[in-house]
Length: 189
Image (tube, rainbow, N blue to C red):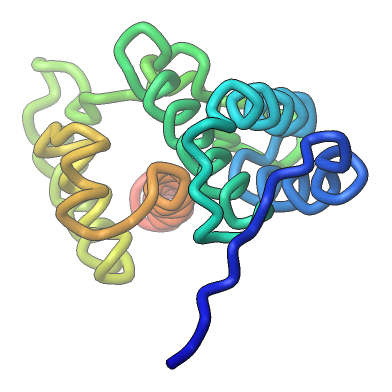
């Protein structure tokens, strides 16, 4: 019969013992040092507020990580809500004079062109469909669900068992590959 170790909390040591670890964990998921620091700080505050709920079944660090994970999820829920979409920036161009960001809500949704250029529109649509078909399967599925079919981030994450941050990385990579494919197969005509 194995004994379960009972862990205790020692908030006076949290910063020295866990701040660096929690920061590194967070920065890998949010890629913004200031936001990572804020999330770690929020984690410590939430831990202090909910100390009475700590049952001692997990280590102090594991308990803090579980709080931090919820904070990171809340962060992505906020920026993926309609109100927060303007805050989501995606680096679309990274070469020379075209370098810059796209604000998520301003991402082109209609690549079809002018109504007067029906033939060009049809060719563009075919080129885009061809480029989408060339994406790696997971990128294609996530891109189509989010951009073409209009699924919510949370629904896609639940369906495909991925995190919101993973979804946005996949969307970014898919768009980058689509841009390169379209530049190669359409815009250089």
